[in-house]
Each structure stands twice: as C-alpha cells, then as structure tokens.
Image 1 (tube, rainbow, N blue to C red):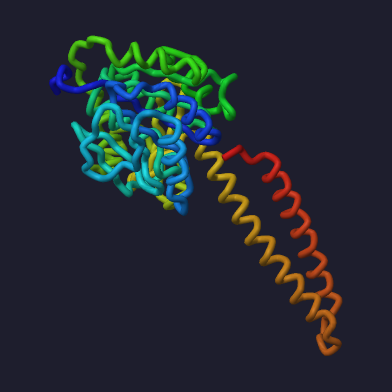
Image 2: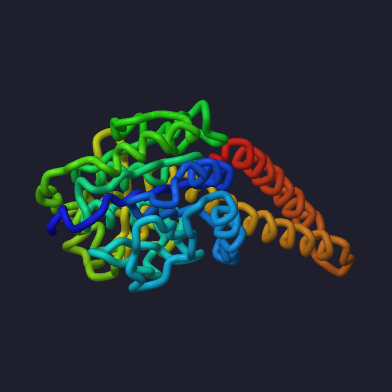
Length: 332
C-alpha cells in the first residue's frame, strides 16, 4: 500500500444513545474535511436507518449516505452501514456483506474497525461512542496494533458508557474526550504526515477474512484460540476462546463472534426462552391432570391430584427463576 496516495480514514462505532452523539460530532466537520467517515450504528434488522441518514445530513455540511457494496469512497463524505449487513473497508472501496453476526449485531462495529486496520494500517482513526456492552473493543485493538489512533468518548459524556469504558480499560486509547471536543482533534489528526504502515498481524488478517466469508473453516478458528466447552448461542456450534489482553472473546467456525459479556447476555436470553417453554409445558400438564382428577371414573384420582400438586411446585420454582433471570439480565 502506498500510504501517500490515500487519505486518513475515520471509523466510528455507536449504539444506544448514538444518534445524539453522532449528530453532535458530524456538526463539527467543515465542508472540505479531508477524510472519509464510516459509521456503524447498531440498529434492528427491520429498520432502514433512513432517519439517521436524514439527521446527519441536516446536522453536517458533509454528505451522508447509506454505503453500497463495491462503492468507491471519497473524502468529505459520511458512509453509514445499512441495516442487517456488515460494512467493511477494502483498498479504495466499501464492501457490504451478510456475514455472521458479531456481538449479536449486524452491522457490527468490530468487523468495520478490523477491516479498516487491515486495509489502511496507521492511517485509521477509530472512535467508540456511547453504547451498551463492548462491541468495538476488539476492533479498536486491531486498529491500535496496526498503528492507528484510538479515541473514546469520555464515559461521563456518554448516555450509555459501557462501550467507551470497555475500550479505555482494554485497549489503552490515545484520547478520551467529550464529543464536543473531537472535531478540533480530528482536524489535526487527519493532516498528519505518516510513514508507511508495518505488516498486519496474522490473527487480525484471519478474522478480517472470516468477516468477508473468505475463511470460515476449522483450521482458521483453531489458529486464533482454544476450543472450550461452550456452544454458540446463534448456531449451536462449538466455540473457541480468544484472549486479547484482558478481553476474552469467543468465535465459532461459521463466523459468529462474542465478547464474554455479550456471550453471557446471550446465554441469559436463551435460558429465559427455555424457562418460558418449560413453564408453559408444566402449566399445560397441570391443567390436564386437574381435568383428569375431576373424572370420577378414574381408578386413582388421589394419585392424579397429587401429581397436579407436584406440578405446581415445579411451576413456582420456574417462576422464581424467571424473576431472578429478569432481575440479573445484562443490559442489551
């Protein structure tokens, strides 16, 4: 890669509370801003994201559009990941893929950050804004290891501080500041003179290729970590544990990836779903037993009545577990 021919790239990840933070951030960019800006904001698969595009266009002097597959990017433009698809960066263009979810999200922040680090090395500036849990932490580690700049929103300035807190704790960011102060900093960073980037670490390359669906076989995942006795909550496959500093992550060979916090949250969701099914089945069984006990022609009505009472014990226990699960569930 000839670094002198390519501008700096800014990649931004946001989740809960992101619209307000992004609106405040893009308002600080001048019309001649000399870098393209790529944004992943978590959204559900059934939304279009048009509202966010409209808000950013109204707030900024730059043009904001939904990114398209194979689209060539330009400085002074904002590219927003479309719903239910990952946005990746290649040399001079954007790739839109339907790869496996990472941290329960598609689009996810980590694949964008990782792909940008692979393609542009030390010319990448990563920013993590407000949001729950810790999507973006692993991707920010990739940016850091490839020589890029890492910026986190000041947690006291974030509506939901989990994501910036995780980046600060696990990555060792270069700058922590409120959104209102990021514009001046970015204006300086994008005009720096930089030497050529060094080689990309092999593990980052492997994960970037998995997001592209180029690699998703067992040897590739085994090269990243050790197999553990947990199952992928999305597909049921075996998981491999990847340790990045203090951050624990898990990945299956089909491409799903989770930090330990997200995996725990997803397991909690699956447990709750299973408990609701068990509750329904026990209540149906109890209703049937009660109906049968009222049938005077049955030879052992007292036995059936006792079984109905036993079912109530199980029902009460499951209800207690559901209440505890609801109280202890991590925020999503």
